[in-house]
Structure formats: C-alpha cells, structure tokens
Amino acid sequence: MPEIRHQSVDGFFAIFKPSGLSSATALNHVKHELHADKAGFLGTLDVAAMGVLPVAVGRATRLIAYLPATPKEYVGELVLGMRTVTDDTQGAIVARCATGGLYEASIVEAMESVAARVSQVPPHVSAKHREGVRGYTAMRQRGELLDFEPQPVVVHTLLVLLHRTVDGGRRVHFRMTVAPGFYVRSFCRDVGDELGVGACMGSLVRTRAHGYGVTQAMALSKLARRVADGDYSFVSSGEANPALLGTLPRLELSELQADAFRHGLHVVLGVPDAEAALVYTANEFLGVARVDGGTIRPLRVMM
Image (tube, rainbow, N blue to C red; front, top):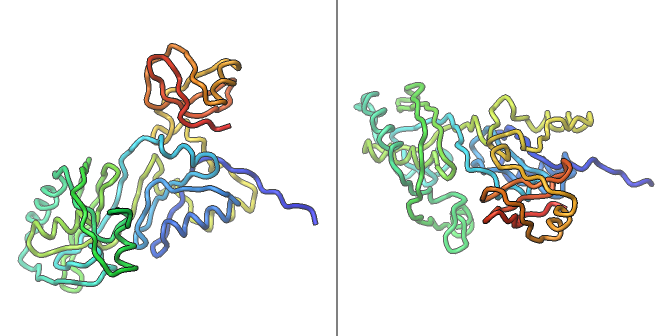
C-alpha cells in the first residue's frame, strides 16, 4: 500500500473554542485535522469559556516565545451574591448573599475600582503553579486549594453592557480589554468582595487575541471541512500581523552570512539593537535573532 502523505503546515491561525472543551483538547483536534506533530495555543481558555484561541502549528511553535504580549478582549458576566471555590459558576458554592439592595451605580463604581488596581491574586484553581504544581492539578488530584501571590495586571478598557436579574440574583455583562496574565474570574471575585456580597464569573467569551477577532476564528467543524478540501489559506506566517511577528524588525543576510547563521554563529551586520528580529536571506526565513552592538546572535534557527 502506498504511503499517504499529508501537507506540512507551518504558521498561525485561530479557532473558536466552544464551551465545555479544554484548550488542550481543542488543540488535539487541530493536530489531528492537520496531521501536525507540533502545535501550541497562544493563551489558554478555561473549559467553560469560549472564544478566540490562536494557535501555532509546525515550525511556528518555535516562535511562540518571541511573540509580543498584546492585549486580549473579553465579554464576561458578573454573577453577584455567590462565592464559589473556582470563582466561576462551575465550582462548588461556598456562600450566598442577598443583592437586592445594590444600586447599579454602586456596582459600576466597584467594577471600575477593581479594574484600576495594578495587581491581582490568581484563582486557586488555575494554570498558575506553585512549587511545580498547577492550581487545577492540586484541586483535582489532592483536593487542595493553592494560594498564589498577587501578580501585576493591567486593564486597558472596561465597558458595562447590561444589568439584569436572573432568578432573583443580579448579573452584569461587561466588555474588557486586558494585558496578558489577567484573570476575569479574579476580577469578578474581587468586585464581589468590594461590594461585600461576594461574586463569581458566569459566562465568558474571548472576542480578540493576537490580532484575531471572532469573525477570523474558525469552528473546529469548519477547520475539518477546509482541510478536507485541501484549503490551507487560513494559515498565516504571522509576518503581517502586528500582534504576532509584524512588529519585529526584519534583517536581510547575504548567503555567506546566512550560512554562518544556520550554524548558530554570530554575524556582524551593524544594525540597531533589538531583543528579537526576524532573519532572512533571499526571502527565505532563517529564524529569530537578538541584535547586540550590531552583532546578530541567533536565538532560534529554523533550518
């Protein structure tokens, strides 16, 4: 029987992760459909959350470490009057409190106050780790809740969209743009503490990440159809996307210089310093380098 060969795919694109599926499971679907040995996602989404999940496949996974830390946008739901172990509605409820006496203006003021903070304590159950153990692993395997140190965070924008009452409880829908490392679950928990009634996160949709919006993110079913049709046009090199590789400087080497770079050697080019730059020769992408004192020092050689 002849060997079945599949097209090798290298690059970036985004899928729309559905609620109820872990980011790791969604990534396994991507690897299966593309017959990719390597794939990675650019920022995990909780199982209950849905939305834009940018991924890198093939050789592009070797560039993830050099991508800029760009803001992410979320549309979330604040559930007031309920505290849970996981800081969302998926976890065990630890306390309830009446919210009937809260004014909408007071709720918005508390949300804006928490959004202005420059640090945040990650949820007990999260991908954060302490002494090599992730929060969700400690909870699932040992029933232990890990405490984490406050982490620096930035909220760029916050917009309250809708107040509503559900089964006698208060819920607030909002949109926010945040720097990487921000937990919307922690934000909701802290707003509840600010108001003295407790709170957790309800639904969550990531609407933008690494330059991809909801309309550019493919459902897994659509990904399967396009691959079956042999259409890989959705895969991008990332060089034109400022939220991927588009802001990194581009360096052109001669063939002699390129040969030295391929072997991991330093190349003197006399160009401005840069923490990371894309290196080419004759439109062939060679890898990523740091430029120090005009000397190109290979960080990642793609050959």
